[in-house]
Amino acid sequence: MDHDSELRKSLLARREELAERVRRIDKELNHPEEPPAADFAEQASEQENLEVLRALESEGQSELALVDAALQRLDKGEHSRCSTCGGEIASARLSALPWTDTCIACAR
Ligand SMILES: [Zn+2]
Image 1 (cartoon, rainbow, N blue to C red):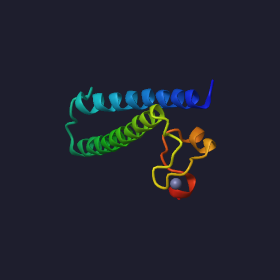
Image 2 (spheres, rainbow, N blue to C red):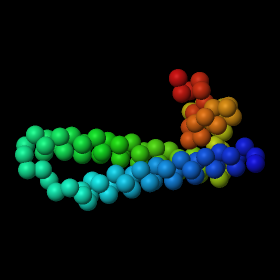
Image 3 (cartoon, protein in one colour):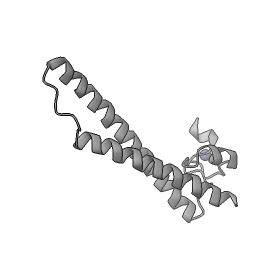
Image 4 (cartoon, rainbow, N blue to C red):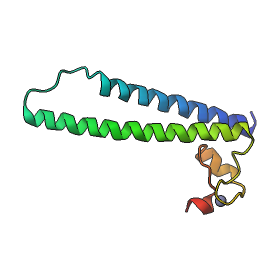
């Protein structure tokens, strides 16, 4: 398999994983399986859990957006071009972080 197909494969796998995570979190946020707790301390900890879940969800969504953008760049053959300096992104860096859009120098 060539390098581009490898990248596409890992991006698609990552995308699936993130989409699944966001789906699960979304389900938990919108359809809690447990009824709301009666006592205040438990309510407070449930509230904290919800906040953690929301943070994880938005993290997952922004990572999904990155993966989607990377797939689009891959389609256009631009994925190895740094979006900041226009230079080449090293293929080792792309293998490690397939959704990155900056070269190692710009990422620092
Ligand atoms: Zn750069």
